[in-house]
Length: 333
Length: 281
Figure 1 (cartoon, each protein chain N blue to C red):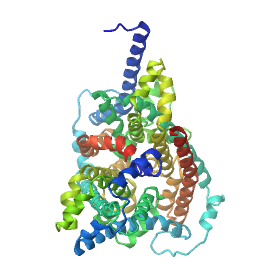
Figure 2 (cartoon, chains in turn yellow, orange):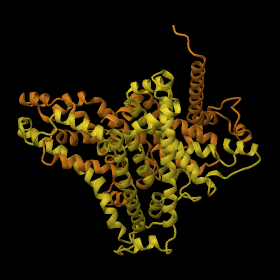
Figure 3 (cartoon, chains in turn yellow, brown):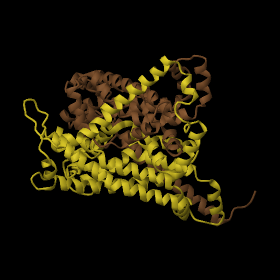
Figure 4 (cartoon, rainbow over the protein chains, first blue to last red):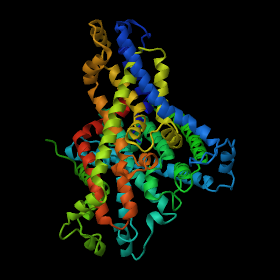
């Protein structure tokens, strides 16, 4: 969720990228290595610097890069992780199992994931945009409301999940009291068809604050003169939002759409709390986790699911990045 | 003063109204659920079972003491603080040690190293290999291991952030200090750290938040309940007392208070980094 924003900025957003490059040039980023200042360090200090860098990179490699690559290796085995069981290479059989009916679940999880990603991305950005428009002001109320919207990110998935489980508790929650006033009832997180939209809603509630703040940052970079000119010409609020804010927010939009897409493809911690993948909420991330640590101990299959998930994320994210950057270029040139 | 046109006046009244309605909706959506949890936490159990929507006539603070004892919340909070503060401090230190040589191009292939760090923001889910690694490296089900396993997740963002902050510090400072014979670590600590203070703080806070709120980590890497952080403790308590909502709500409030206090004290860093940092990095 919060991770990745700044780098996305570097990867996309032409305007900001060139600004960063300018800053870098000014501060000497582009100077050749081994130029004077480096040599000013004493031999001992130079080694300390290398050692520090090495330790940091070692942590990154051992706990970041290595496990990511090892996913592929584990996915080619029948590793169960249980003591006493033997492990052997099983070739592509885990991948074959994804596509056949031998291990049902993968295809339906793929469709659930697609629904989840579409719902979260569309709604989170639409609401984020509206909220940003409302909360961009400099008054005290606005800043208090901004903090309020950011609150769920601080509370974290466990607390957020439990809050909404209580609110949607089928027998004692306020939502069921409300429904019973209309003479109906629902199992909410236990009901197929209802659980997934609810989970999408909570996911959005959890992360909306960040989306909103990124949009507010984008709105603040739009020159107020454009709005003044528009209001002088008698342009209405709605047209202003659609014709000025929306296009000029392109860089912020790129970040928010990408964060929502990548985030919702891979996330499963909130789903783990809310439904544990029951009631048709089994996404690919949840399936990968459950295959390894839930009802079965099939680490090989779980790893294959996460490799497939990564591939699906790339297939969607790569053209999306290209499209969003083209859109930025079209608007700003 | 110019007299406003009636149409214009009406439009501004409409704008004020819609602004108020929007604000009320935000409060309803984002504050009322939190208030509701606090209300339930104060209700006597029998009262909640009778009428879950009504505010308590006589608040029952005993919920808090009961869940504190029954749910082992004290030791779990201590665990959480140890894990999140240690891991976040290590993440921040490691980020600085990586970011400085890269930002100053003091080693070969700095650009490539930076790119490889950015890749770290988009790595696939690797909890399964991490679990195998944790077991083989004896990091499984112990405190030190749990902390070490939580250093990496915040690292890429920290390096990217700090590289930007360090780039804003003039190189002339390096040259002046080093020709005076100032050592590397002393320089980082005495000159760079104070000048990139807010970058270090943001790195620390985001990493700390990540460890504090992690629920998958404690499920995969810990078995001994004495080692549980509050996230897993609370979730386990929910699993075994599913209908005991007054106690559970009190537990939620207790578990959230420390991180909430920290957030309120530091909210401008969170808000500003999300608002400005993302756009102007």
